[in-house]
Image 1 (cartoon, protein in one colour):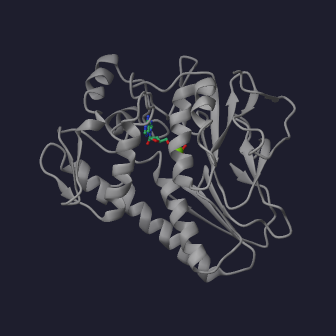
Image 2 (cartoon, rainbow, N blue to C red; image 1 turned 90 degrees about the vertical axis):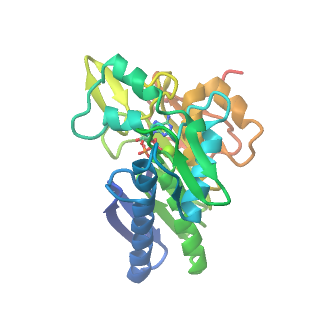
Length: 324
Ligand code: ADP
Ligand code: MG
């Protein structure tokens, strides 16, 4: 995901293992510093890639005792649990043990033995994430269970960044958290922000085309983001909660345009699991949320051609309509 605007003021930092870019209409290094500080504070709350965080405190106490957490952690986990329990949901907040075992995108990634996957699957039941609203506690009822908010933390953080920028009276801005872009207003002298849709498995800056948005979030989840190859098979980082293996279907990526980045993050994973036909049906009664699917046979499919402003740049790809 790339924003293509040459912007008067662009700031970057490496946080959460990603290149974070903030674009503003005017130079304001102090503001940029505060935004990066906010992102880094939030990362330290939600991460499972460090020994300590609020989420890790819950994971460390799995099978032992409930843990009191802050309101923001409680609410995000409650939302993630609701989404995990939707019928046939591809999203599972308790997927942690499998993510840790596969190590996809980290050193030492390899295909685990089938019996290990089967055993770990037993530790991923979202029902066993026990929430107590009154006590504001989260309890993982089995030892070895682990919450992983990796699929939605960036969306949550992107929304908090935009809240903060609005509070600071900023009316034009773009934040790119590496796959999650959120925007305020439009780029200077433009109707919107042009957000590039990356060409899968191509040079880092290669684009299929771009979406033009204002005040909206653009989130992409793709199998080319983090993966490893073994025996000519691509193992990528979105796992199927039913099988414990990477989701396997016709898709290379799903991009969601929405008002809130948390929705974009939730829906990219859900839509990944649904595929195009079911995904477009699912979105039909969700105004304000639309998706762009990129398929293995190089088709680009828009769930709603009226709502999405997409410009195709790479003629090896073909714009197609969803089949009813
Ligand atoms: P990224 O922006 O890093 O590409 P995504 O939003 O696509 O991330 O989410 C992928 C991450 O979510 C994985 O790295 C893992 O931590 C976690 N994850 C993998 N499979 C699932 C799943 N089925 N449900 C929820 N989270 C998942
Ligand atoms: Mg996501």
